[in-house]
Structures are given as C-alpha cells and as structure tokens.
Image (tube, rainbow, N blue to C red):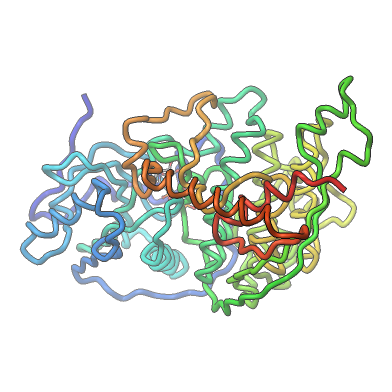
Length: 480
Ligand SMILES: Nc1ncnc2c1ncn2[C@@H]1O[C@H](COP(=O)(O)OP(=O)(O)OP(=O)(O)O)[C@@H](O)[C@H]1O
C-alpha cells in the first residue's frame, strides 16, 4: 500500500520539498546537463498565483480522464483554479536540477499526474530562476501527443509547482539499461526515433530549440508512447514558415531485397534499386534564424558548434538526434571519452568520426546517423529544411507519419509494460475507430485507383497527409 501524503489545507510550509535542491539523479546514468551561460531572466512574483493553462481550452482532449478530472476540480474550486490543497501526493518520482517531482492525484479522482515542485528559496542563482520560467513558459505552449501538457501552474508561498502528465514507464535510458548489450533492436529504435523526431519537429515549428535530447529525457507514457521532458534548457526564436513545391528524387533499396541479395535468391544488382521521383509540397517551419551562444546540454550530446561556442541554432537538435539514434542502437554514444574534456575534444575533432557495428541491417541507420553527425551544421541533414528531410530518409521508409500516434508501441522490449486497457484513452492517444479506419481505407483505395489511371511516374503529393504514403508505396513498386 503506498503511503498517501496530503497537502496541508492552510499551512504553506511544504517542508517535504525544502531539503535538497542539489541534483540527486533519479535516472540511472548520472549524466548531467551542463549550463555554462543562459539569458538571465528574473521572476519577481512571490504572490499566490495559480494559472490554469491550456487544459481548459483543449477541447480535443475531452475524452481524456485527466482533462475531465482537472475540469471537475476547477468547477468545484471556489476561484476556478487548481491549488495545492486539491492534490494528494502519492510518492517521490525523482529530483532534478530545479526541484523534485512527485506522483500525485487530484483528491476524489483516480487520474494521476506528475507535480514538479520548485522551492524558489533554494534557487540560489538568477540563472536557475530563469530556467524555471523557461520551463513553465515552454510547457504552457505545448499541445502535442509526444509532449507533456501543463495542466496547472501553482505558485504558493515560495513554491512554484507544475502539474503535468505522468509517464509511468520511466525513461528510455533506464529501459536501454535493461536490454542485452544496453541496446534496442532496429524496430523499437525506429518507433521511438520516429516519435521523438515528430516531437522535435513540433517544437521547432513553435520556434523552440530543445537542446537537451538524450534517452533520460524521453519518458514513456502508460501506453508506451514517448513524452519528451525537461524544457529548462530550451530557447525560443521566431519562425518564418514557408510552403514550397520541390522535385524530389530518390534511389533506395528495400530491406527485403537487401536480404535477398545475401541469400541464394540473389537478384541482379540493377533490380535492387528503386528510383522514384515526386513533386512534394513542403511546409517548413524551422527556427533557421535561431542563434544562441550559450553552451548548454549534456556533454556526450553536445554539437560541435555548441562546444566551440561560436553560436548555434536548431541544428544542435539534429546532431543530438544522431547521437540519440546511435546510442539506442549501440548502447553507448559515439564520441564518449575517458573524461568529459576528452568527450568534448572528440566532438570537435575533425578527424574523429562515429564507429559502427558491422551489421547489414543497420546500413540505413548508419547512413542516417552519418548525415546527422556532420560536424559542419550547414551540411548537416535537417539544418536546411528541418524534420522533412530526416523523415524522408530510407531509415524511416514505410512510416505513415500522419498516423504515427496510432502505431502500436513495441511490445517485445524487455521491461516495457504497456497497459493495454488504457491505450485508447491515454492522453491524446486514441485508437483508430472502425469508422475512421473504414474511411481511410476507402480514401486510400480511391487514391490508388486514380494513381493507376494517371500516366507517368511523378506524383504531386503533399507530405502532410496520408495520400503521400499511399502514393509512395505505389511508386516504389516500379524498378528502373
Ligand atoms: N512527467 C513525469 N512523469 C514521470 N516521472 C517524471 C516526470 N517528470 C520527471 N520525472 C522523473 O523525475 C526526475 C526529475 O525530473 P526533472 O525534470 O526535475 O529533472 P531531470 O529530468 O533530472 O532534469 P533537469 O535536472 O535537467 O531538469 C526525472 O529523472 C524523472 O525520472
């Protein structure tokens, strides 16, 4: 039986949070985020304030029990806001740089949340206060299935508390440590990487550069889908969205053909490659003009331009995405040295490159990682057109991006417990209803028929709807 801790109704001396603010990592790695400089922004508010955030306006979540619980609690609250007295603490989940995180639920409700409690009296530097404000500000902007929702911000006495979605499956780093060789098989890697990519794409479209991607910050929801966490190192800039059509030509080979190549069913080399040409309409919203000189992040994940301190933009997230992919597949990071200094030297060295396992199944992963771990950010995949180009890499072939939240999380991963009964209701994740499935199949079929009757190999497709993918599978049957 878990011990229940209630917030006092009147007494605001929440002494349970006042013991430590020094970082004691709950995560298994102890790899800490580094902050060498940051725009200091002081918050002077000390009054009791409670802000209800996006949850009151996010109507597409009305099926979500968390959303309903928050709504009911607000209705019953005398001032329409959530206060600490409405919450029941269940247990301590972990301690970070800024404060402690607790599992809690609303009184008279079974909906569980994570509560990040920051004791402002223990934040000794303006930089830390600024990070709290950054985290709260970024969280308040988010509305995405792979990112947490800020249900309420509660400022009482010297505490700032952020009530967010709870991720009961721990973090990806702890999950990796449970796998043989600390690495995951290819399919789960594709699943987690695709979801993280979509979350980064959304952040970038909002002008947010994340700067702290690592498996420790990829939490896993009850339904096995990801939830990025930790936004205190983010920076925000303007985004000028563009919409352009461009001719896109690609030659690739399918995994099944690669397998045949090595077996007795070996096909002639020219049959291995597919070439397809598409005219794609691309929506790009990437903070390409973002610029910061702050050196923040986690050593093994720092991009060379971050280490050298010459200024960086959103490309640091694509570098980190390359390191992330490498770590999921290899169980370690590619530039790790004996000391943090050596790691940084390896990152900036022009001669040091990532070493890969010799495994033909990893060919496409290797190619993608190499394109992401290009030391010059101008030549790095993703830096010109953002996530679009990464999504098109053969490593992600076959993924129907618009349906990504409906993909089944990998069940064969050791230590990942997916609660099936909640899959259709957890957060934003809803099952494809029979009706929508039917209409999807119908529209896919009619598109296919239209595609067959049209002449020529090039298709005018938008990558922002599923027609693109139906068209792609049709086109990929053609060999040149
Ligand atoms: N929404 C959540 N659901 C479940 N566990 C969480 C949640 N948020 C945080 N945690 C746990 O609490 C710990 C502390 O989280 P917190 O975000 O404060 O710090 P951190 O991730 O260690 O990073 P930093 O110190 O850089 O902010 C995490 O390691 C994680 O295990």
